[in-house]
Length: 280
Image 1 (cartoon, one colour):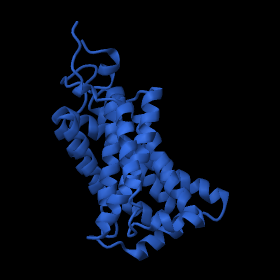
Image 2: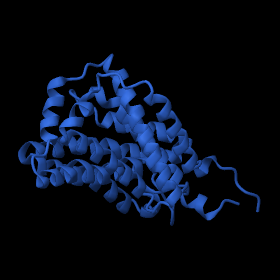
Image 3: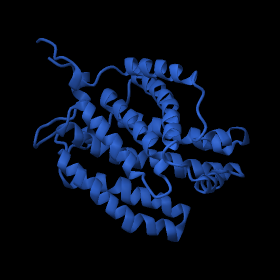
Image 4: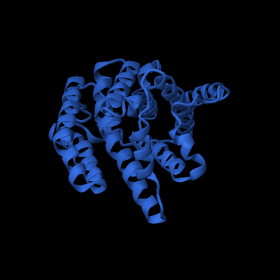
């Protein structure tokens, strides 16, 4: 018999009643709808309002649709969005896994830059936008690029999308597909160089959710990742390091990253779908 901690992290496959989560087909339709809405509504908001428009676009067209979809569809909010506080072991394991994942993402960004050139003008523009010349500006940037994306993107991708994918696919397949869709969703003419590291980090966050059963933990890790990048860009000594996707990372970093990856995976444990039921 499975324990309470195991069943609490597993999205149910039932078709109705309490515990109902959306199907894989339903969430794929949701993602397509969100993409259209963001293109038609979110992009104009950003063009007209600038940075406040970016915040509104994420709240209205990334976070809003999945919440409305779950409520109107009669799905279980707690299970679909994994509304569960993480235990201490999962919290530490998630932080370790993210630290390893970001180092591996650096290697992936460098490898991809060998095929897809990094647009220097785009990087310079983004660096200028994320450079804070006052504490007030830094707090606003932290809210805009770390707090809001951590909430909105996690609700959509590691909440609704991941729950539906787990109903239609084995857990590893659900994690991979969710990460790939996350990477593709960030694809734009000037951001093609980011697709591999973005997809990889999407898989890391999805794995954290399936192991811990906690979307708030993924939100925290997403926030920490974006806040760390912002802090690096804000400081002159680390600004070039944050931009240096075309520079090969130190090779000694890779064994450390892999060791931390294994440690993080061990601390998080296996997803409930991969655990053998205990005898009654």
